[in-house]
Amino acid sequence: MSQLLAGKTAIILGVANKWSIAYAIAESYRREGARLILTYQGERQKATVEELGQELGASLVLNCDVTKDEELAALVEALKGERLDAIVHSIAFANRDDLSRPFLETSKDGYALALEVSSYSLVSVSRALSPLMTEGGAIMTLTYLGSERVIPNYNVMGVAKAALEACVRYLASELGPKGIRVNAISAGPIKTASARGISGFSKILDGVAAVSPLRKNTETAEVGDTAAFLGSHLGRGVTGNVIYVDAGFKVMGLPTPE
Ligand code: NAD
Ligand code: IMJ
Image (cartoon, rainbow, N blue to C red; front, side, top):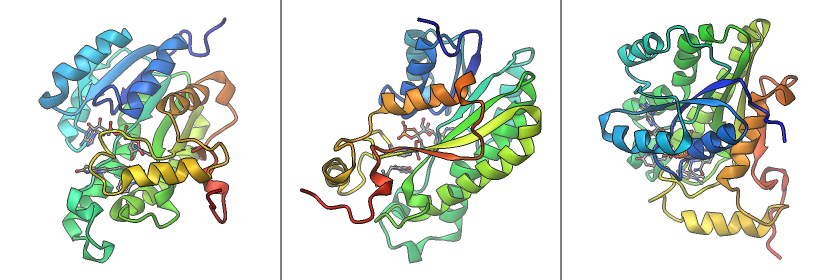
């Protein structure tokens, strides 16, 4: 069968381990014939992500903490001469305390940190890397329903995701004339490292599986395949949007277990 992403090169930011959504996206991209470039967040992750990159047949595995301008500049330098066709941004962070205390208690520093890592980084990464998309391309990021509805404890991350989705629309408007599409994938809850330790997460998973139209939880592979669609010729008419890969959970007005 023909591959959706043959001849394309994708850079994927946000693989931490094999449970990462970004890892499943890399697997889908690889299956569809893309050349892969992965980045990791600092020395602590280097060995793990290099090993995962090897399993995935990645061409390059590079360092980039998105909060460090010099590391983003070094990434651009390391990619000199490359053409990029897809950029996958799968990065978020907030202080753990801000995901359990009342939202009212969010400090100025905690707010700024969450927005810097989880929203602004899409802008800085797009500015740095979109010039390498010389034949057009697709930029995509990961978001969550907590951007538009109140989800207990999501707190400042909900604000960051609301900003992220607004960034998607403004970036789509500015980069569209260059043939670059920008979208977000809103995934249902998935037990990754970013979900571990969130109190009541297993209950949330069970609740979603009980009431969502597809009566299941979201699998990372489903997110990976939607990302592949967006990165491919098949996604050419879609930009500035949020695509829900959530077993349909969002459409339910009165989620009722049977
Ligand atoms: P994950 O912990 O595997 O991935 C988060 C990634 O962000 C890690 O690779 C981490 O290294 C990276 N990161 C954090 N700060 C960074 C920095 N300063 N520089 C570079 N990288 C940095 O968890 P995940 O669930 O795969 O999360 C990926 C994305 O998916 C996030 O944006 C998250 O908000 C979103 N998302 C997750 C879920 C879920 O339930 N797991 C649902 C919807 C959306
Ligand atoms: C996170 C917190 C509270 C509720 C949550 C989540 N629900 C879901 C998540 C219901 C699905 C996971 N999610 C969508 C995220 O975006 C997580 C982001 C995140 C997680 C952590 C945990 C560890 C830490 N900082 C974090 N920063 C961001 O120290």
